[in-house]
Structure formats: structure tokens, C-alpha cells
Amino acid sequence: MNCSPLTANERLEKKILSRRRFLKSGGLLLTVGVLLRTGSVFAAAERQLRDAFQDDFLMGTMIDPVVYLREGSELAGVVAREFNSLTAGNIFKWDHIHPTEKHWNWAHADAFVEFGEKYRMHLVGHPLVWHAQLPIGLFDNPAKPGQTPAILTEKLQQHITRIVDRYRGRIHVWDVVNEAIAEDGNWYDNHWYQKLGPGYIASSFRWAREADPAAKLLYNDFNLWDERKRNKTVEMIKFFKSEGVPIDGIGIQGHMGLNYPDLKELENSIEAFSREGLEVHISELEVDVLPTVPIGEFPQYRSELDPYKDGLPKEVDQKLAQRYKDIFSSLIKYRDNIQRVTLWGVSDDRSWKNDFPVPGRTNYPLLFDRNRQPKRAYDAVIKLK
Ligand code: XIL
Image 1: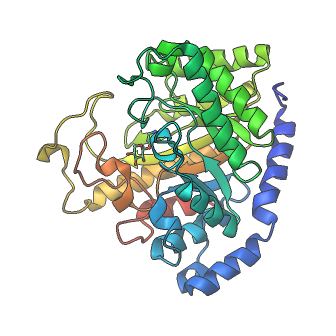
Image 2: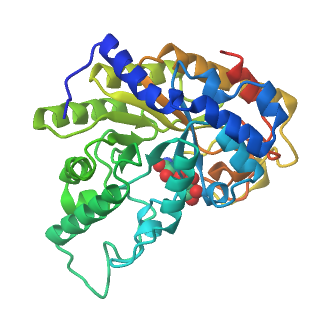
Image 3: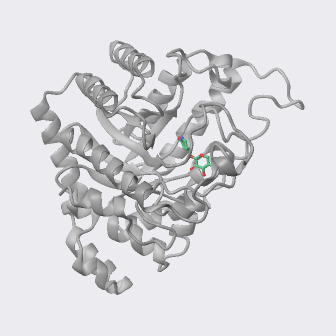
């Protein structure tokens, strides 16, 4: 493990080497192949995100099974044309992939990896350890009360080892631990923390490294531009380094809105994590345009919380484009530090932001519209290059 801080030059060198693997290896052939398959004249005439940003960072998107189970669909065509890194949205989550102690559900994960390999994508597994989307009974099984910390630790180790080992050499990046830090800068008081203390985080990284020494290991969280979360993350990185715990990077999720965060704060966090010698990945970017709701509140649907159900007014669409332009301008400034920028979905119709934190709204957070056409925001982003 190498945790020593890298100089800017070393970082750049590392980055160029790793990009070369994904971008230069047959990228052109691949694009031609995809064009022939999709017959897309648009793609032939226009630049795509992946190419426009090839000197900056990998351009990723989160996909769900609709994409990789329906090859040849319009959505799969957009993915293959525009992006060079893929994250699976839900299928590596514990409740899906490992719903009971003895039952593993590999079909979707296998299909995701096969799809990615076919299109020579950089692949991200998300997440190995989280507090949400867990199977009922993992912690509190009334039929089997009294789970000891030792039993839980073993379950966690087996879970991580089995998954990472299965995709060794095929999944390039793992979000090892997701959202372990609370808004106040303390450890998030989740079940893992309650039963095992904060040691579960370091152990998870060690087990992941053992299972695939070549995979990049990330800590992933939201609101990492917040000073308290940033400081706690830096403290964790320093502790990891002093203890020899393997960590390669930080995933700044990037769930943003039209007015938050202050991009200076985002930049401060990119700088802080880079100073520790870690890669920065923007792992779940999107821009919510709807009225905001305080974190942790989940109001019922009310029409005043859903102002654009009949379409996004032009001036809001323009604001969204400007916001994306500002965000990408910041990211381009930090291109030497940022390895990857991943949108949390392709087109607005499939975004989780239509249902979170208020169910049933109509949101417009991504770069492609409900007809899978590039939006103003897409043009604003690509024109930066
Ligand atoms: C979201 C998915 O996109 C939804 O489909 C699911 O219902 C809930 O989870 N932070 C994360 C992601 O790390 O895993 C979450 O994904 C969004 C917030």
C-alpha cells in the first residue's frame, strides 16, 4: 500500500497512466463499433462527453438494469456513446446481492460487469458497506437474537471478501464504505457503528484490499463540502495512513442543487483530500431543481413542492445549464486531482430525485431529458471544452 502524499506531478503521471488504460485502448475502434451498431448520425457528427473530457477525467454515469439488460435500447446507446465509466446504482447493495445469509444474487452484477467489459468501460462497484438497503434481519433477527460483535464482524468480512474476490481484476474501483460520517462531523450512529464501533471502517478497507490488491478503494459520502464532514474525513485519512489502512481515494457524491453547495467549499474539500495524497472522484453528481427539504425530512407529496410537473420553464432550464457550467468549470480547474466525474443517472425520467426525499415529484437533475435528448445543461458542459 502506498499512502504517502503524491506531488502534483506524480499524481498527474499516475492519472495519465490509468486513463491510458481505459481511453486509449481501442477507444476509437469502440466508438466506431458503437456508431455502426446504433447507426447514430448524431453521435458521428457531435462530440461526446467522454471524448470532450478525455484530458480531464473519466466521465461516468450510474446505470440500472434497464440499461445493461436491454442492449440496443436508446438508453444503452446513449450510455455507450457518452460515457467511459459505469457505476451500478443498486445491485451491489446488500439487500439485493446478499438477501439472506446463504443466498447470493449474482445475476445482475454479472450482467453489469459483462456489459461494461463489452464496451470497455471503467467499472465502479457501489457500495460494500452502508447503513441502508440492508436485508431485514441482518442486525435484528428476532429468531436469532444476541448477535455478537464477533459474528457480525465475520459476516461483514465474508460479505466484502466474497464480492470483491468474485470481480477481482474486473471492477476497477470499490466504494468500500458509504456515508459513515454524520452531518455534525461525528461518526454516523448506524447499526455497524453501534455494534462494532468505528473499527468496522478500517477493517472493511483491509478486507477489500486483500480480496483485490489492484482495485482502487474509496470512502464515499454526501455533503463532503461541509467543513465538519471534510475535517472528519481528513482525520480518518490521517489515521488510516498512520495505521497502514489501505485507501486510495474519496468519493464526493455530489448531490447538488441550483443554490448549493458553495463551489468554493467543494474546491476546499478537493484540495484537502488531494493534500493527503488521495484521488478524488465525484461519484454521484446531479442538480436538483425542486424546492429543497431539510436533510433527514421526508414530507408527503404536496403540489407546492412539485412546481414543474408540466415542464421545466425555460428560465429554470437556463439556470440549470449555468449551474452545470459553473460546477464543471470548478472540476476542470481541479482536473489534476479528479480522476472521475460520474452523473447519478442518464436521463431525468429515471432519476431517484423524482422520488427522494418527496415521492412522486417531477425533477430535472441530469444532462438528458425524458426523451433521452441532450439538454441545455449538456450543451453548456460540453462547450467548456
Ligand atoms: C439511491 C438509488 O439511486 C435509488 O434508486 C435507491 O432507491 C436509493 O439509493 N447515496 C448513495 C446512493 O450512495 O446509493 C443512493 O442511491 C443515493 C444517495
